[in-house]
Amino acid sequence: MTDTIKLLARRRSAPPVLMQGPGPDAAQVQELLALASRVPDHGKLAPWRFIVFEGAGRDRAGSILAEIVARREPQAEAKRLETERSRFSRAPLVIGVVSRAAPHVKIPLWEQEMSAGAACMALTVAATAMGFRTAWLTEWCAYDREALTALGLAEHEKIAGFIHIGRVEAEIEDRARPDLAALVTRF
Image (cartoon, rainbow, N blue to C red; front, side):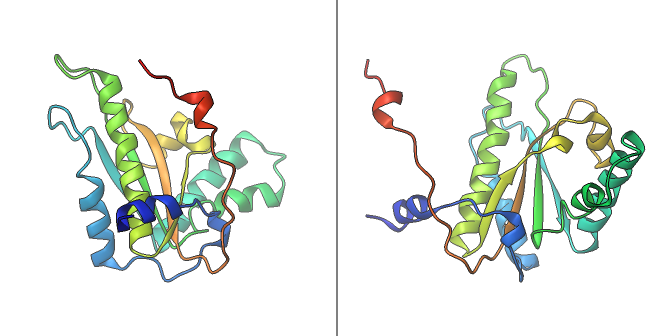
């Protein structure tokens, strides 16, 4: 079994609330982004981009979300607002993968969107290979246009995933995996 196969077999998502620092350093972040950029990309469009939430930027992003919730839900409890304020600060690093898919004469939108998803997966695998744990999340803010605009996304852009990256001391139990016999057909 190759190291790559072993890595893929042991990859597990970890809850961001369990993540601790230190997170990736500047050189590691740069390497993660470079590796995530090496995904299949029909037409060389780079139909994705990255938003790096680190340091105080994580708290600023959380404050933006808490303000949106407080305005929309005046009766929101303090715990709910704190959940939003801490949304991006649970892990030492969060990388937002933004799908920039746009109509193209030759490259279908779907292929561009899948490329953004591949960038998310490449980030999770690369971070795991570096010894970190990850969680690929979206949550409400990934589908809320006001939140997306406040986080810097253009009108046509979408979040493919927020990749939370950190260290976890606890062993993460594997979840039940799909029954391949129910999912695989042969032609």
